[in-house]
Amino acid sequence: MKRRNKVVTAVAVTVAVLAVLLAGASVYMVNYALCPEKEDVAVSEKRMLEEYPQLVPWTDSLRACGALRDTFVTAPDGARLHALYVRAPRPTRRTAVIVHGYTDNAIRMFHIGYLYNQSLDYNILLPDLRYTGLTGGDAIQMGWHDRKDVIQWIELAPRLFGDSIQAVVHGISMGAATTMMTSGETLPDYIRCFVEDCGYTSVWDQFKKELKEQFGLPAFPLLYTASWLCQWQNGWNFREASAVKQVAKCRLPMFFIHGDKDDFVPTWMVYEVYDAKPQPKELWVVPGADHATSYLRYPQLYTEKVAAFVGKYID
Image (cartoon, rainbow, N blue to C red; front, top):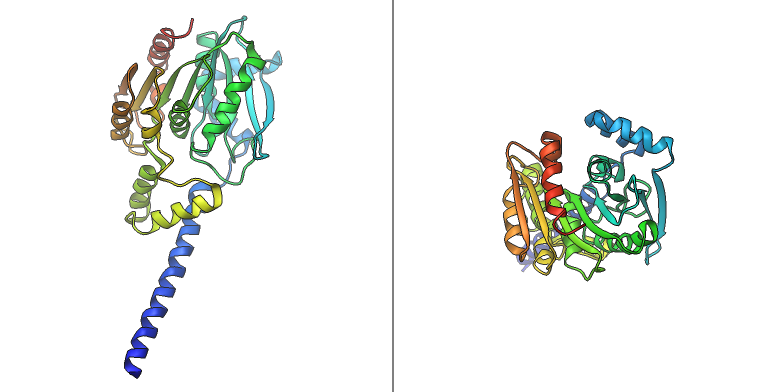
Protein backbone atom coordinates (compact mmCIF):
# COMPACT_ATOMS: atom_id res chain seq x y z
CA MET A 1 0.00 0.00 0.00
CA LYS A 2 2.80 2.43 0.90
CA ARG A 3 4.52 1.70 -2.40
CA ARG A 4 1.28 2.35 -4.28
CA ASN A 5 0.77 5.64 -2.45
CA LYS A 6 4.31 6.68 -3.35
CA VAL A 7 3.67 5.91 -7.01
CA VAL A 8 0.41 7.87 -7.00
CA THR A 9 2.12 10.78 -5.28
CA ALA A 10 5.01 10.71 -7.77
CA VAL A 11 2.60 10.67 -10.71
CA ALA A 12 0.56 13.52 -9.23
CA VAL A 13 3.68 15.59 -8.63
CA THR A 14 4.93 14.90 -12.15
CA VAL A 15 1.60 15.90 -13.67
CA ALA A 16 1.51 19.06 -11.57
CA VAL A 17 5.05 20.01 -12.58
CA LEU A 18 4.27 19.38 -16.26
CA ALA A 19 1.09 21.46 -15.98
CA VAL A 20 3.01 24.34 -14.43
CA LEU A 21 5.70 24.12 -17.12
CA LEU A 22 3.07 24.00 -19.87
CA ALA A 23 1.23 26.98 -18.41
CA GLY A 24 4.48 28.93 -18.20
CA ALA A 25 5.41 27.98 -21.76
CA SER A 26 1.96 29.07 -22.96
CA VAL A 27 2.33 32.47 -21.30
CA TYR A 28 5.77 32.82 -22.86
CA MET A 29 4.52 31.89 -26.33
CA VAL A 30 1.58 34.29 -26.27
CA ASN A 31 3.75 37.14 -24.99
CA TYR A 32 6.53 36.30 -27.46
CA ALA A 33 4.14 36.23 -30.42
CA LEU A 34 1.67 38.97 -29.53
CA CYS A 35 3.66 41.40 -27.35
CA PRO A 36 7.04 41.89 -29.05
CA GLU A 37 9.06 45.04 -28.58
CA LYS A 38 7.45 47.88 -30.53
CA GLU A 39 9.47 49.87 -33.04
CA ASP A 40 9.53 53.64 -32.69
CA VAL A 41 7.68 55.42 -35.50
CA ALA A 42 10.72 57.57 -36.35
CA VAL A 43 12.87 54.44 -36.67
CA SER A 44 10.23 52.88 -38.95
CA GLU A 45 10.26 55.91 -41.22
CA LYS A 46 14.06 55.94 -41.37
CA ARG A 47 14.12 52.26 -42.33
CA MET A 48 11.38 52.79 -44.89
CA LEU A 49 13.15 55.62 -46.68
CA GLU A 50 16.48 53.79 -46.65
CA GLU A 51 14.83 50.76 -48.24
CA TYR A 52 12.81 52.81 -50.74
CA PRO A 53 14.78 56.03 -51.43
CA GLN A 54 12.40 56.93 -54.26
CA LEU A 55 9.85 57.79 -51.57
CA VAL A 56 11.91 60.64 -50.11
CA PRO A 57 10.79 63.42 -52.51
CA TRP A 58 7.18 62.29 -52.18
CA THR A 59 7.13 62.20 -48.37
CA ASP A 60 9.03 65.50 -48.21
CA SER A 61 6.45 67.15 -50.47
CA LEU A 62 3.55 65.70 -48.45
CA ARG A 63 4.93 67.17 -45.25
CA ALA A 64 5.86 70.49 -46.87
CA CYS A 65 2.27 71.10 -47.97
CA GLY A 66 0.60 69.49 -44.94
CA ALA A 67 -0.96 66.71 -47.02
CA LEU A 68 0.07 63.88 -44.68
CA ARG A 69 -2.46 63.93 -41.87
CA ASP A 70 -3.30 62.03 -38.71
CA THR A 71 -6.73 60.94 -37.62
CA PHE A 72 -7.93 59.11 -34.51
CA VAL A 73 -11.09 57.20 -33.66
CA THR A 74 -12.21 55.27 -30.60
CA ALA A 75 -13.08 51.59 -30.99
CA PRO A 76 -16.17 50.16 -29.27
CA ASP A 77 -13.93 48.59 -26.62
CA GLY A 78 -12.40 51.99 -25.85
CA ALA A 79 -9.06 51.55 -27.65
CA ARG A 80 -7.71 54.66 -29.37
CA LEU A 81 -7.04 53.91 -33.04
CA HIS A 82 -4.75 55.96 -35.29
CA ALA A 83 -4.34 56.23 -39.04
CA LEU A 84 -2.49 58.38 -41.55
CA TYR A 85 -4.26 59.64 -44.63
CA VAL A 86 -3.45 61.58 -47.78
CA ARG A 87 -5.89 62.94 -50.33
CA ALA A 88 -5.15 62.38 -54.00
CA PRO A 89 -3.31 65.13 -55.92
CA ARG A 90 -6.65 66.01 -57.52
CA PRO A 91 -10.23 65.34 -56.36
CA THR A 92 -11.22 61.72 -56.96
CA ARG A 93 -13.42 59.02 -55.52
CA ARG A 94 -10.71 56.38 -55.95
CA THR A 95 -9.47 55.34 -52.52
CA ALA A 96 -7.14 52.70 -51.03
CA VAL A 97 -7.19 51.40 -47.46
CA ILE A 98 -3.69 50.02 -46.89
CA VAL A 99 -2.96 47.54 -44.08
CA HIS A 100 0.51 46.86 -42.65
CA GLY A 101 2.20 43.67 -41.50
CA TYR A 102 3.33 42.04 -38.26
CA THR A 103 5.37 44.35 -35.96
CA ASP A 104 5.17 47.08 -38.62
CA ASN A 105 3.02 50.22 -38.61
CA ALA A 106 1.32 52.56 -41.07
CA ILE A 107 4.59 54.21 -42.10
CA ARG A 108 5.99 50.84 -43.15
CA MET A 109 3.34 50.82 -45.90
CA PHE A 110 4.43 54.10 -47.47
CA HIS A 111 5.67 52.22 -50.56
CA ILE A 112 2.15 50.96 -51.24
CA GLY A 113 0.83 54.41 -50.35
CA TYR A 114 3.18 55.82 -52.99
CA LEU A 115 1.90 53.28 -55.52
CA TYR A 116 -1.71 54.36 -55.06
CA ASN A 117 -1.32 58.06 -54.29
CA GLN A 118 1.56 59.06 -56.54
CA SER A 119 1.31 56.54 -59.37
CA LEU A 120 -2.46 55.98 -59.55
CA ASP A 121 -3.89 59.24 -58.08
CA TYR A 122 -5.78 57.59 -55.22
CA ASN A 123 -6.72 58.85 -51.79
CA ILE A 124 -4.96 56.66 -49.23
CA LEU A 125 -5.81 55.67 -45.65
CA LEU A 126 -3.17 53.78 -43.65
CA PRO A 127 -4.25 52.51 -40.21
CA ASP A 128 -1.96 51.54 -37.36
CA LEU A 129 -3.26 48.17 -36.16
CA ARG A 130 -3.47 47.29 -32.45
CA TYR A 131 -0.27 47.61 -30.42
CA THR A 132 1.53 49.42 -33.28
CA GLY A 133 2.38 52.99 -34.17
CA LEU A 134 0.10 55.42 -32.37
CA THR A 135 -2.76 52.94 -31.90
CA GLY A 136 -3.42 51.53 -28.44
CA GLY A 137 -3.92 47.96 -27.37
CA ASP A 138 -2.21 45.40 -25.18
CA ALA A 139 -1.22 42.94 -27.90
CA ILE A 140 -0.98 42.32 -31.62
CA GLN A 141 -4.23 40.76 -32.83
CA MET A 142 -2.91 38.93 -35.93
CA GLY A 143 -5.65 40.31 -38.16
CA TRP A 144 -8.61 38.64 -36.50
CA HIS A 145 -9.67 41.36 -34.09
CA ASP A 146 -8.08 43.89 -36.46
CA ARG A 147 -10.69 43.18 -39.11
CA LYS A 148 -13.23 44.99 -36.93
CA ASP A 149 -10.94 48.02 -36.69
CA VAL A 150 -10.35 48.02 -40.45
CA ILE A 151 -14.12 48.01 -40.99
CA GLN A 152 -14.34 51.03 -38.68
CA TRP A 153 -11.75 52.81 -40.85
CA ILE A 154 -13.60 51.78 -43.99
CA GLU A 155 -16.77 53.32 -42.58
CA LEU A 156 -14.88 56.52 -41.73
CA ALA A 157 -13.35 56.90 -45.22
CA PRO A 158 -16.30 58.79 -46.80
CA ARG A 159 -15.95 61.49 -44.13
CA LEU A 160 -12.33 61.96 -45.18
CA PHE A 161 -12.62 61.64 -48.95
CA GLY A 162 -16.27 62.18 -49.90
CA ASP A 163 -19.48 60.18 -50.05
CA SER A 164 -18.95 58.87 -53.59
CA ILE A 165 -15.74 56.91 -52.96
CA GLN A 166 -14.87 53.57 -54.53
CA ALA A 167 -12.26 51.70 -52.53
CA VAL A 168 -9.79 48.83 -52.54
CA VAL A 169 -8.33 47.24 -49.39
CA HIS A 170 -4.67 46.28 -49.89
CA GLY A 171 -2.62 44.47 -47.25
CA ILE A 172 0.82 42.88 -46.95
CA SER A 173 1.77 39.91 -44.71
CA MET A 174 -0.31 40.13 -41.51
CA GLY A 175 -2.05 43.04 -43.23
CA ALA A 176 -2.89 40.71 -46.10
CA ALA A 177 -4.33 38.19 -43.65
CA THR A 178 -6.28 41.08 -42.10
CA THR A 179 -7.51 42.03 -45.57
CA MET A 180 -8.70 38.49 -46.25
CA MET A 181 -10.32 38.23 -42.83
CA THR A 182 -12.09 41.54 -43.46
CA SER A 183 -13.28 40.38 -46.89
CA GLY A 184 -15.60 37.79 -45.36
CA GLU A 185 -17.58 40.39 -43.43
CA THR A 186 -20.50 42.56 -44.56
CA LEU A 187 -18.97 45.71 -46.02
CA PRO A 188 -20.24 48.96 -47.56
CA ASP A 189 -20.99 48.95 -51.28
CA TYR A 190 -18.10 51.29 -52.01
CA ILE A 191 -15.59 48.53 -51.24
CA ARG A 192 -15.00 47.16 -54.73
CA CYS A 193 -12.04 44.78 -54.46
CA PHE A 194 -9.09 43.50 -52.40
CA VAL A 195 -5.37 42.96 -52.90
CA GLU A 196 -3.61 40.56 -50.54
CA ASP A 197 0.17 40.19 -50.70
CA CYS A 198 1.72 37.18 -48.87
CA GLY A 199 -0.94 36.64 -46.22
CA TYR A 200 -1.18 33.46 -44.15
CA THR A 201 -3.97 30.89 -44.25
CA SER A 202 -4.66 31.09 -40.51
CA VAL A 203 -2.98 32.10 -37.29
CA TRP A 204 -2.95 28.44 -36.29
CA ASP A 205 -1.04 27.42 -39.43
CA GLN A 206 1.44 30.27 -39.12
CA PHE A 207 2.17 29.71 -35.44
CA LYS A 208 2.42 25.94 -35.97
CA LYS A 209 5.05 26.55 -38.63
CA GLU A 210 6.96 29.03 -36.43
CA LEU A 211 6.78 26.75 -33.38
CA LYS A 212 8.42 23.94 -35.33
CA GLU A 213 11.03 26.10 -37.10
CA GLN A 214 12.06 28.32 -34.20
CA PHE A 215 11.76 25.90 -31.29
CA GLY A 216 11.60 22.43 -32.87
CA LEU A 217 8.29 21.73 -31.13
CA PRO A 218 5.11 20.03 -32.38
CA ALA A 219 1.73 21.70 -32.20
CA PHE A 220 0.55 19.49 -29.34
CA PRO A 221 0.24 20.45 -26.57
CA LEU A 222 1.69 23.97 -26.49
CA LEU A 223 -0.16 25.48 -29.44
CA TYR A 224 -3.46 24.26 -27.98
CA THR A 225 -2.87 25.70 -24.52
CA ALA A 226 -1.47 28.96 -25.92
CA SER A 227 -4.57 29.28 -28.10
CA TRP A 228 -6.79 28.81 -25.03
CA LEU A 229 -4.77 31.48 -23.22
CA CYS A 230 -5.18 33.86 -26.15
CA GLN A 231 -8.92 33.23 -26.04
CA TRP A 232 -8.97 34.16 -22.37
CA GLN A 233 -6.77 37.23 -22.77
CA ASN A 234 -7.90 38.60 -26.15
CA GLY A 235 -11.26 37.01 -26.90
CA TRP A 236 -10.15 34.96 -29.91
CA ASN A 237 -8.24 31.76 -30.56
CA PHE A 238 -5.73 30.69 -33.18
CA ARG A 239 -8.05 28.33 -35.07
CA GLU A 240 -10.92 30.76 -35.58
CA ALA A 241 -8.54 33.38 -36.99
CA SER A 242 -8.73 31.87 -40.46
CA ALA A 243 -8.23 33.72 -43.72
CA VAL A 244 -9.27 30.57 -45.60
CA LYS A 245 -12.73 30.53 -44.01
CA GLN A 246 -13.18 34.27 -44.52
CA VAL A 247 -12.24 34.40 -48.22
CA ALA A 248 -14.63 31.52 -48.84
CA LYS A 249 -17.44 33.96 -47.93
CA CYS A 250 -16.10 36.80 -50.09
CA ARG A 251 -17.87 37.56 -53.38
CA LEU A 252 -15.85 40.64 -54.29
CA PRO A 253 -12.78 40.45 -56.56
CA MET A 254 -9.42 39.66 -54.95
CA PHE A 255 -5.87 39.77 -56.30
CA PHE A 256 -3.50 37.30 -54.63
CA ILE A 257 0.26 38.06 -54.68
CA HIS A 258 2.97 35.84 -53.19
CA GLY A 259 6.70 35.36 -53.69
CA ASP A 260 7.76 31.92 -54.87
CA LYS A 261 10.73 32.03 -52.47
CA ASP A 262 8.72 33.01 -49.39
CA ASP A 263 9.68 30.78 -46.48
CA PHE A 264 8.23 32.95 -43.71
CA VAL A 265 4.65 32.74 -44.93
CA PRO A 266 5.24 29.68 -47.14
CA THR A 267 4.18 29.95 -50.76
CA TRP A 268 1.85 26.95 -50.44
CA MET A 269 -0.45 29.09 -48.33
CA VAL A 270 -1.42 31.33 -51.26
CA TYR A 271 -2.74 28.36 -53.21
CA GLU A 272 -4.96 27.34 -50.29
CA VAL A 273 -6.52 30.79 -49.86
CA TYR A 274 -6.80 31.24 -53.63
CA ASP A 275 -8.60 27.91 -54.03
CA ALA A 276 -10.99 28.80 -51.20
CA LYS A 277 -11.96 32.14 -52.76
CA PRO A 278 -14.89 32.15 -55.22
CA GLN A 279 -14.51 34.01 -58.49
CA PRO A 280 -13.62 36.71 -59.42
CA LYS A 281 -9.98 36.34 -58.44
CA GLU A 282 -6.47 36.58 -59.87
CA LEU A 283 -3.13 35.16 -58.76
CA TRP A 284 0.45 36.33 -59.30
CA VAL A 285 3.23 34.15 -57.88
CA VAL A 286 6.28 36.39 -58.08
CA PRO A 287 9.50 34.73 -59.27
CA GLY A 288 12.48 35.16 -56.97
CA ALA A 289 10.60 37.12 -54.30
CA ASP A 290 10.84 36.13 -50.67
CA HIS A 291 8.54 37.43 -47.93
CA ALA A 292 6.97 40.84 -48.62
CA THR A 293 9.56 41.81 -51.24
CA SER A 294 7.51 41.61 -54.44
CA TYR A 295 7.19 45.40 -54.75
CA LEU A 296 10.82 45.91 -53.75
CA ARG A 297 12.01 43.56 -56.49
CA TYR A 298 9.60 44.61 -59.21
CA PRO A 299 8.16 48.06 -58.40
CA GLN A 300 7.10 48.89 -61.95
CA LEU A 301 5.60 45.49 -62.72
CA TYR A 302 3.90 45.36 -59.31
CA THR A 303 2.38 48.79 -59.95
CA GLU A 304 1.21 47.77 -63.42
CA LYS A 305 -0.39 44.55 -62.23
CA VAL A 306 -2.16 46.21 -59.29
CA ALA A 307 -3.32 49.07 -61.53
CA ALA A 308 -4.68 46.63 -64.11
CA PHE A 309 -6.56 44.66 -61.46
CA VAL A 310 -8.12 47.53 -59.47
CA GLY A 311 -8.83 49.40 -62.72
CA LYS A 312 -11.39 46.75 -63.62
CA TYR A 313 -13.49 47.57 -60.57
CA ILE A 314 -12.71 51.19 -59.64
CA ASP A 315 -13.13 54.04 -62.12
